[in-house]
Amino acid sequence: MKVKLDIVTGFLGSGKSVFINNIIKETITKDEKVVVLQLEDGETKISNNFTNVKTFMYSDEIDKLDCCISSIVDEEKCTRIIIEYNGTENFEELQSTLSKTIVRKKCKINDIYFIADANVIKSYILNMGDFIIPSLEKSNLIFINNCLGKEIDKIEEIETLVKNINLSGHILKCDNNDDVGRTIRESNLFSKKRIKKFYMNIRGEKN
Image (spheres, rainbow, N blue to C red):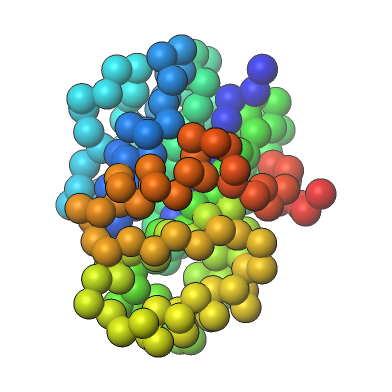
């Protein structure tokens, strides 16, 4: 059985590590072994309180990531790998690396999560589209963080921008980092496995 690959992307400071900590807490099963592969070093760390979860920092070239993933699968005997990927990096380069035979034989992309900061996501979409759109349009779930204090019409404007890029992904809105766990639980998207898949094989092609 192939190892599941989850990708969590978004800009630095958007809350990716906080999201990963909470998604593991809410979804890990007793028979799973999870590896978190961080491709950036942010302020928030992956919790070391989880059983059967290991974290690795990857700082080499992205085109060598395939060998790293292959080694992790063989050595750790994991069932899921969560890749934390900086939204300022080229998402298509990540896709290209994950499409290599050495990865495709052992892994399959499961879910792609885009973590957005409500304070800056509009500006990023309008001014940095080349960076942000490729990952945003392929995400199963767009998680809009830091909505607390934002006017309703501003949040609706963000949702409209996102939907114009991604028609099929779910959108969740969250007050701040402290509210991530509750938002995930109350969405029922994970416990009931209701996330609508944006079906994409590991070559990056739509099915």
